[in-house]
Picture 1: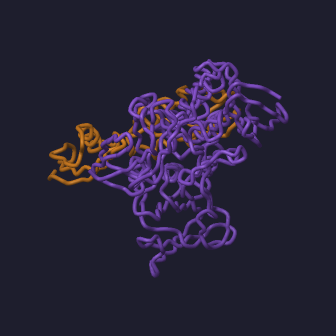
Picture 2: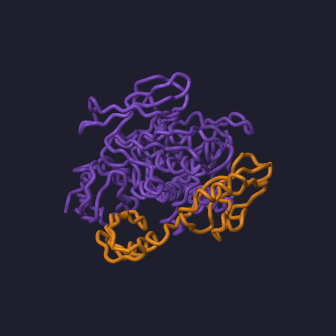
Picture 3: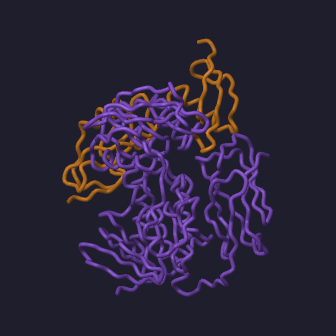
Amino acid sequence: MMEVDVAVIGSGPAGLTAAIHAHKSGARQVLLLEREEELGGILKQCIHNGFGLEQFKQDYTGPEYAERLMKELEQTGVQCFLNTLVTDLSSDRVITALSPEHGALEIEAKSIVLAMGCRERTRPSIGIPGTRPAGILTAGVAQRFVNIDGYLPGKRVVILGSGDIGLIMARRLTLEGAKVIGVYEIMDYPGGLKRNVVQCLNDFDIPLYLSHTVTEIKGKERVEGVVISKVDSNLRPLPGSQQLIECDTLLLSVGLIPENELSKKAGIELSAATKGPVTAEIMETSVPGIFTCGNVSTVFDLVDYVAQTGATAGTFAARYASGSLSTDGRSVDIVAGENVRLLFPQRYGFQDDLVLFIRAAEPVEKPVTIEITPPGSKINRLYARPNEMLRVKIPKEKLAEVKQPIMVSIRER
Amino acid sequence: MAAEKKHFVCVVCPIGCEVDVLHDGSKIISMEGNKCEKSEEFVSQELIEPMRILTTTVRIQGARWLVIPVRTHKSVPKRLFPRIMKQLRHTELHAPVNMLDAVLRDVAGTGADIIATRTMPRE
């Protein structure tokens, strides 16, 4: 059995940052486990710019951002196992992994950081009726085909869902010569960031149809068309609004789900709202010594937020491994109040400042107040949009006397 | 040119102010909806010539992958994107390539270089 101080599972922005910070915080043996043949995770295929604006004050592309972190990692002596698939994780922090180079591995870690990221929702998860031809892809798979493997997956493309990856791919496919007929969104507001709607769709005259969805897929071997319907306020297709659109490809950008198969094996408590581990402010899960960060925890909008959670997870995982993390086990829940769809983290354990990520349930295009009670903090923002996470910080000192659950609400000012 | 109205979404920051602009074809006459002065600079440039960074891929020989990600090293006129893409379709690189290597100078006469956005060793 191999023994390490801190093991990090996954080497995307969260895992890379966690490994770097675990080392910086004094962990001697840090092991980074990556399933693919290269470090960097999904950043490798995110060739567009807009990464690291907050963290590095630079406008990086995904690969540039990854390479910057990789260079930083090289300075640390953190050990990396590539092509290494983690197949099991136990609550007493034993990792089982497989790799062509190292064989079957059992790794005992004093602490573990989960950084497995998320997966895309697929056709079965939204249940589109119709045939099952070739040419139906999730937006991220199309992104991989185009940006890494160098293939164009179709010529006439309909995009269902307006998540950020779908918007990014609308632009990318257009640049590569495909015709993107339109982006169809079931909700009455876009799923992705406003800047992506502007820079990816408006810039290229690609129409965005809100309150529309695909109600049938047609085609035998290959997609031949999709039926688009308008939906009512209950998201039900409106009879008579059907319209057949000829296309050879349907891209799905209908949401991301944290990838927690391993977390379940370790018996980690998951949040119904985020689909990720129930987490405390130091990024510790319900299982002592197992920490979480990035999109395996909850799906973030910005890589800067992902990296921020990675830094916290790495720092506290190192402290846990060295035995210097003192906890009296005292904690309070953080609960969603008015107009809050989800919160991260969901628990406060009195160890650090509380950096709270909040996703609104409904858009409010007016000034809002975020109320956090106790301790009764009120933080003003110009708006609250479900597609743009709110982030607030409450200093540790303000929370010292808190004894009841912390309620978070978003109210119009 | 007579005054015209145009709607912009400012993308300088994540707020994304919806700005209504009265302009004479190249200059702002008046604008409303913006929460700060940065939108003025953005809209002024948009009126004259919308500028963007172009990110894409080009083919590469001798590497693990068939394509390598690249970008323009500075903003270029958006209207020249098709011309740049056309030139890049005829471009092929050879590994090794280092991140930020200029792989094509003065692409499509824009004055901008195409630079690699990752390192790709020879394999």
